[in-house]
Image 1 (tube, one colour):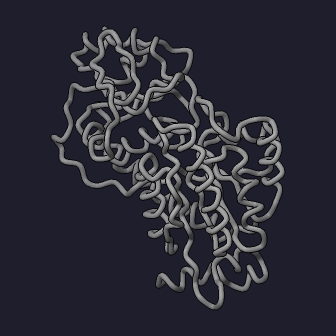
Image 2 (cartoon, one colour):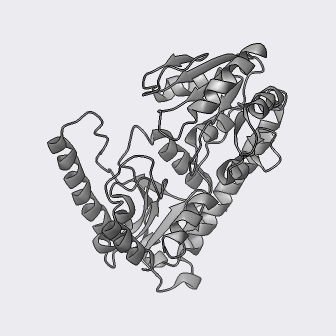
Image 3 (spheres, rainbow, N blue to C red):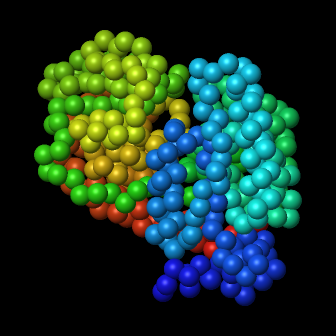
Length: 356
């Protein structure tokens, strides 16, 4: 089947007069799906993986040209200006028509409501909500914003997408109507050289957040040392940790991939989270992951993956799992291929069957 014929399925007679038909076929031309990403640095890889998945599934995509709201270290006036510029871009994007996928909700749980107003009878929108209750203060998370977001979640033009059952349950508990769970986008893995990793390095990477389990890392360090592992933390904002080498700085995309690919194991020491882009990157690069038995990691790696640790188990179980998964790296190729195939299938089914 050609790309155009696959795309025409989106405009087939079964969707006559639906918003999806208007979203994909406009003035007798196939309209690409617009990707709206206001965090072009932070979510660069996420957007690339999403576009790769949709393209492989036969979808046409294009960038919506979202302005950046990455204002770390900027003044209050600069942050306000970025937010206003982003709001104006919402309106421009929605008025073009077609379907829009929003990679990050600049305005928190208020975001679906803003898109509902902006897209009035012109566009359909999927807003990806990564953190229903973020670990840090974020605009649009107050009671009024949540109420307006719930209202928009009941409207046909806007759909809310999450990447884990944990996020789904959280939004449903907050009264949101029918969020959609879709797999976190994953780039198709590249073959990995047999000797590409350092068989001794256990890596924790990514920006420090309050939900990082420092107590676990502290108790794990001497056990890893006894087993002959090197313990390394890289990422911005991390404190010094006894028994761990800490590289406290921002990593570029290339550096992050190099650090992950050069490790024996990637550790996910999170006490609370909804998804993990680091775990996804590790799977793409063929590096074993050890983390809590969380719905997102179980979905990504399979419930039988030996690197998933139940909450009642202590640091000794983590140390044992780290040793065990180093012997299971060969299994990751089939796991990643299966997850990628599922990504393509479920995203395509979602977009073809959307009727919001």
